[in-house]
Length: 494
Ligand code: CS2
Image 1 (cartoon, protein in one colour):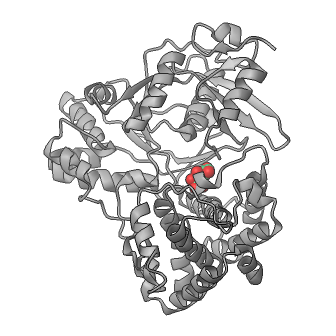
Image 2 (tube, helix red, strand yellow):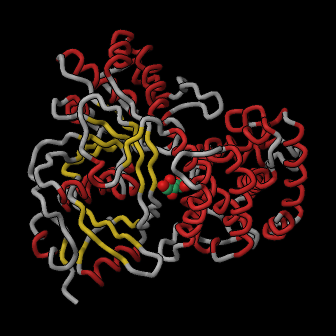
Image 3 (tube, protein in one colour):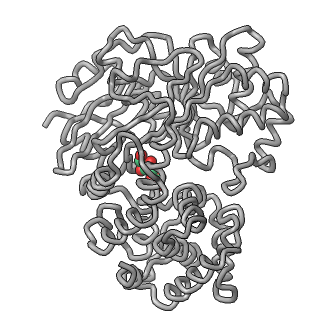
């Protein structure tokens, strides 16, 4: 074993004898893509696709400048400074094989918190053609039920009063677009890469609502000039662990303070609707289509919902990871029953896709024992995820008289989870949710009002008025509170 060597540009050649490293020059100043929200997913997905493209076409001058708009992003900022924005992607195969590779497509990173100016300038620069986003479901600042922009957010209020001091993605986008508008520069494309149905349309609607209040002239220009392609993104990217950092250092001799791990599967389907040019992503397997809707609906209602089904049930049962859930036959059968009986019927036919094959592959992906995707990551921010992934399916099935029992058990279990915060063994569950306090407060009233939890309109909409649902939900809540052996309840249903 060779002595571990720090990952940075200077050591790249030496490291190249240990694991694959970029074979292209990284000194080009053109950062055509500015990306907001450089989490693990971005680094395993868009940045990886661009890396593949640059490997294939050395003349490609596209590269990425990452942007951090949250204090927590400073950790990556500091690490990137030390590593010249290089990081390792460790692809983990089901048979235990790991394929590590150094990715070089990110060449710069800027924090927008303390000093917004360099970020606005970067986005307003003539070289910037695309601003892409992975800001999570919650980052779009809409009410999950009504889909309307949330003007009550104090950060939004601040930027409306002080356009020169943006805080959220909307403030930054408007500040940069305004500069381009005034300078006579073409607009950029806003490319949402988040798990939201019609993610581009949603980004457009939210940005225009904000801009109309801030500056109606600018709003008009944005409406005419900015393209917002919808896209479906997919790659399971668990949280990096200390063990991953150790493996990379001890087995491969690469010292990287924040590598990213992911599954081999990757998919990106985008509407080919760009304002100002784009990389030739089709060269590396990205699918360009005219209408992405069926693909995104399929992915959100099967994969993301499937994750939540396993996650919420797994949390109460005490399974630590998604693959642990998949080693449990009851969980697999329950998941498949939900997918087949509740999620699939509302999808209809999708051209070119065999849904049975898609689900088979999905189950194999979830079962990858090497991925160890934590149940706590899956359950994090359930208040932003479940309305889109699962509650939408419930609404659809209620409207057409379809099966609702598998999804209803998840909502009832989520109530117990939010109320008690412990699993069936009495062990504390790590709950990460912006709405944690409200969720707990409502769930905690269940003992006196069995339907209290589902009275949160912003999450459940009109479900409280649907007798078929409330009756079933009340029964299930009662069962879980009486006996937390969740597997018993699952078995009774399959
Ligand atoms: C997961 C997603 O956050 C979640 O709950 O379902 O992060 C999922 O792993 C990705 O969307 C896969 O593409």
